Image 1 (tube, each protein chain N blue to C red):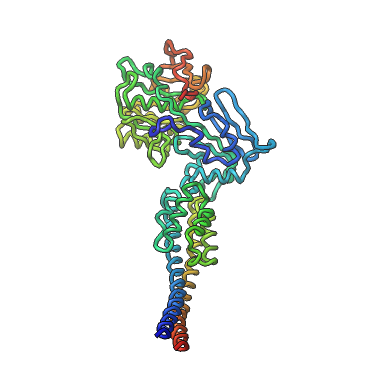
Image 2: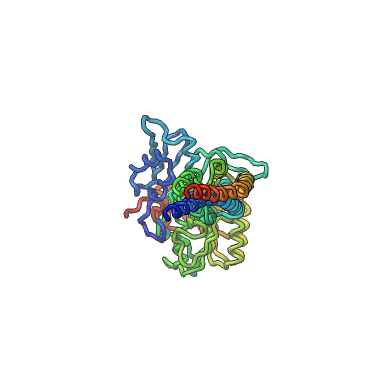
Length: 331
Length: 167
């Protein structure tokens, strides 16, 4: 799972210690190498396991829900290592990231505090997204991201949630950093707002992003991109989930400053993408030279289409599967 | 000759009991002093750093309470809640001789809330604990000053009395 110990670790060894006892017992029976994508726990409800293309509900003994509100409280404490104050920013944003890059989305009561900061209290729902490194999943797509002179183009990877954007983005960063698949080795800067790309724990990247990669984790995207461009002079700037106009301006600034930006964004298709004002703005000036659409038509991580700067579809990429980014990997 | 030895033994024994009782009062005072400093350190760590509780606990202990906080840090690192870790550590580290029940109650209240809320609340929790511990410390200091000397003197005098009677 991590670069330190290859594939010996799996989601069971990483996550079960955090889960309530009853839920952990139920999950003991699940194969560690099934294509599990998410584990959802809710107080008073069964445990929901989301696999690639199907799901399962796990009930406790006598059909009782295996998790109650008290379990959720304890679980949150464990996720935050008994130190909620240290995760204050993340809790306000509704997530916690665990060692190994697992993002845990939180749900509960949002308490608008007097100091203007909203705080998530009474957390009663968890969505644990299973992080997976799939080294080489960008191999098929990387040649399409090069221009005629062999330089990497600024690229936006687009898909609905859960289609493998982050996994692909991570591998693109890794390949560029190592100089694999026709790309020369380059200095890569990763702005990892939600700690998913690097799985960073206290600044130390847990996932392999290559030897020439600098990671700024936890920073706001736009601010982080500007800091990276100014301070670390990256050749490639990688970031996840562009969403706001501020992000778009930061991408614009970075590209104008000479960096190649590879980023991801949520959108179902090209029309949906262009309806998002912040993202559409990037296409006005032709800043984004490649747009990759991911989907699930042939499994998670299917490349549905690749477009050029003028949003013309590039040849030979129709529903091409470049690697099931989040799919089951035999060990 | 034997009588003299027995009398000397009685003097020394009684004096030791007195000194021991006095030393226990001193240890409580020192332990409470260390606890106040430890809570202060925890407060600073919690409000000004992103370090988790177990790392902060590691840097808290001194002479009397060093083992206690070390044990707590180990337990909290293994995902045990701070209050449960404290209860367990108190039992294993045998500090009940020096930390009295009323001191324990203050520490229990503090550890029950440690790490379980955001920074401001953590700061307030620590301030409350420091205030309560400081009051206990003042009481422990007074007790040591007044009773400590009494215990020592009484031990020696009692020993001397028993010795004289034996002779």
